[in-house]
Image (cartoon, rainbow, N blue to C red):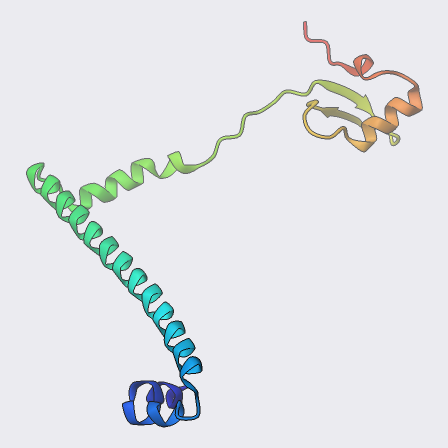
Length: 138
């Protein structure tokens, strides 16, 4: 790979490397290199813009911290306070159906998602409908 980079970056070596190409082939190579250059330039400009925005944001944060006499330690306390808030809390759904599988084990189902195979087998085995297995809350 170093040989390739050396050829690309040396006028004399590059000229010798493309000597066998006709003008249309050389134009195609130039167009491809131009496209690579344009893409690289855009990425570099975006990176520079992101760095600038980040520096401006940090400057604003430092200014706010100085105005309010806050330290990095204060911010670490803030992070500790919010650490527990990041956990996702799932909603607990009470069971809606109660049935007994082939082994005699009493099972429940919330009625959400696909119907459990054991529940379908229980319905077929006992010849009842789903409503017969509803849990009645009083």
